[in-house]
Amino acid sequence: MSLQIQYPWDFDARGRTATSSEARHIFEMVEQLLMTSPGERVNRPDFGGGALQLVFAPNSDQLAAALPVNLQASIQRWLGDILALEKLEVSHDDSTLLVDLIYTVLRTGEQRRETIARRNVS
Image (cartoon, rainbow, N blue to C red; front, side, top):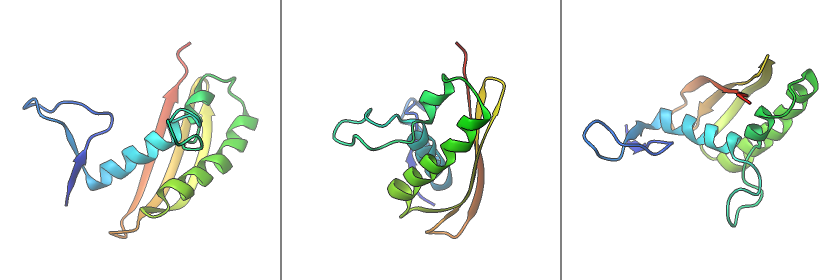
């Protein structure tokens, strides 16, 4: 098992750059992709899922229904060589946006189930 630099970047207990396991690093890449707004990255204007912008948008069933298509396309384009997305569901609970994922890590065949939750605190 190889170690990767943790996202978001941080220090570990020894004062060195914190690391993550490969499985955790892949989840961190998914989270970073989905929360990055298109146009935010220099020289990569189409990188990102834009879900973070939607945390501050009015929460609705229509929003939760439209978002999965965009997020699935972003994952396929940017991480399709690393994972196979099995299921992606978006829901909202009051001011919290929830993204539930099931994916398979292509290198190991391991299936992972993860949830990304972002709360609107405004």
